[in-house]
Image (cartoon, rainbow, N blue to C red; front, side, top):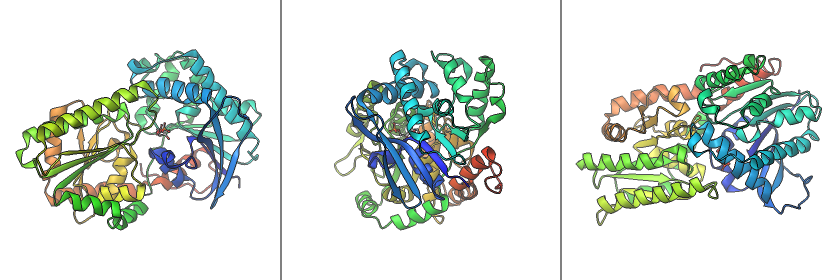
Length: 455
Ligand code: F6P
C-alpha cells in the first residue's frame, strides 16, 4: 500500500507559529497512521537562494519535507495572491480583495516549484492530499510533471456563491486547475453547492461535478477531552483560575483576522455589560488573539481597531479590582488552552464567515460533563451545521448577540448538560479520524474498509 502524502502551505516544523489555526492541528490528526508531509518551512530566504533545496526530517512515523520561500515568493504568493485576493474573496469580502497580476504569477510559480520538488519524492502508489487555497493549482502542475497518482484536494475555508466568485480576475484559470484532482472536498454542503454553481455558471468542469463532496473537518474529540481534564493542573490554567477569584470566564480564541468578527464580539460584550448590571465585577472576557499576516494592511487596521474597542470598554466599565476584557496578542500552547476552555462558563465563537472553526469543537470537547459551559456560535461558521446545542447568533446583530451572552451566563445546569451531551456525542462519532477516512475512502475506495459516516 502506498503512503499518504499531505501537502499544505504551513507545516508544523516551522516553529510554534505554524500551529496557529485549525489546519495544522487537524492534519496532525490525519497523519496518525504515518506518511509524508510536504510544504513551506515558514522560513524566508534571499531571492537568490537555491530553489532546489529541500529540508527533511523524520518524526515518529511521519517524514517532513519542507522548502524555504524567497522574499519575492512570500510577498507575491503568500501575502499577495493567497492572502490579499483569495482569502478575502472566498470569505465573501470582495471589497477587500487586492488583485495584482504579478502576485498571481508568483502564486503559480510557487505551485510549480512545489510540484517539481515534491514529484521527485512521490512513488507510483502514493496518495497525495493537497490542502487549502494556497495550493489550488498544485495537481495541475503535478500532472505536468507526469504524475498519475490519485490526488485529492480539501478546502479549509468557505467557497462563496458565483456572484461573489465572479469578482476574481483569474477565476476561470482557477476553476480549470481543480479539474486535475480526483476529488475536491469542502467543509459544508453549502460550500460544495456554491462551487458546483460556479462551475455551472462558467460552463466548466462537467466531469468534475461528480468528484465534489462535503467532508466537515473535526478534532480528536476524546483525546482532547482527556487533555482538557489533565490541563486543569497546567500552570497557565492555575494562574488564570487564581486571578479570576471566582468570577465567571467567557473566552474567545481566534487568529487576528477580520473574518473572525472580534470587533463586533467586543461591542456585543460591551452591550451585554450595559444591559446586565449583575455581570459588572462578576464576569471576565478573555480574548486570546495571536497575530499572523501582520504585513497585510487589513490585518494591521484590524489590530488597531480591536485594541481601541477593548480599551474603550475597559475604560468605561473597569473598577479598581476588576477589568472586564483581558486581551492577549499571543499564542497559548494547545495543552494549556484546553484547560482554559474547560474553566470557561461561556465560549465565544462568532466569526463573520468561517470554513468550520475547530475552536468551537475543542471548546465542547474540553467541558466537564458535570458542569459544562455554553457555546455561543455564529451561524456563519461551518460548525453551526453540526453543533446545534450551541446558542446560534448572527454576529452582525450586536444586541441579539449580547442577549445570547446574558442567556449563556445564566443558563440552568440541566439545560447546559442537555445541550452539551448531544454535541459531545456527535463529536465523538465524527472525529478527525472519521473525517480522514471518509475522504480517503471516497478518493480510493480500495485503500481501506469504508467507515460509517455519521455526518
Ligand atoms: O485554515 C485557514 C488557514 O489559512 C490555514 O491554511 C493556515 O494554516 C491557518 O489558517 C493560519 O494562517 P497562516 O498560515 O497564514 O498563519
